[in-house]
Image (tube, rainbow, N blue to C red; front, side, top):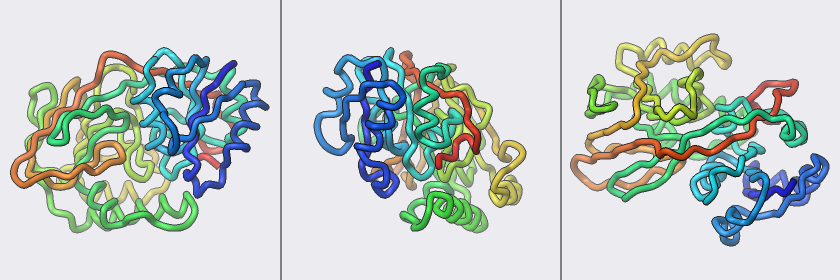
Length: 299
């Protein structure tokens, strides 16, 4: 089978190289054509005929491929090399990279919606979602932590707990299919996948291919319970959030920081309006049979 391999050579501190990945795919009986996500014309590479697109990188690289690939009928496999790997983790993709690759021949196919966000910056495609409040503020303050992947995630979760102890509610108007939600929130995540931030499963039971987005809101009276949930590295249940589902979400607020997938676009002064909805076309993600280990926690 012909595979287009898109690799972020700086992901995971550059420990996984081009030669390692091509050898791995050959071992799994694929014929890979290599394309760096950093150099060259990605859209042209994705337009070349292939039976499969393999993305080796973090969430930013995966989202770049999914939103730029011209033919959504070509299935996509993910070799997660980033820190959070929220997209891969939402599908339960994790474990050793060679086991993931070997499992692709018997993988199940899962559908994934692609979203469109419209705001002061114009229009952009996205995969993960949009967020305001505690997670964005934590990411801005924390920057890029050092250490192993596990250490980085632990530090980020602790930082979110700390932020939730003192952050004041933002007031904004949110409409889900024209129905208003509570107007005081500590955190808002408009999600197309199950995870956000430092691999937090905010909507663990969501269907990522049903044409609906999840709007997860943390209200002020949910603060203490959410901090307790964050303290447990392996929580036994879903987080204490108010969740609504819909096809279109509109937000009106005063321009406090917002993330759009991995980006934090600038906003001017005054009120800001952003709309988010899903397009009709979907992409197909290959999910290998789960291997021994912790799904969603790549080695």
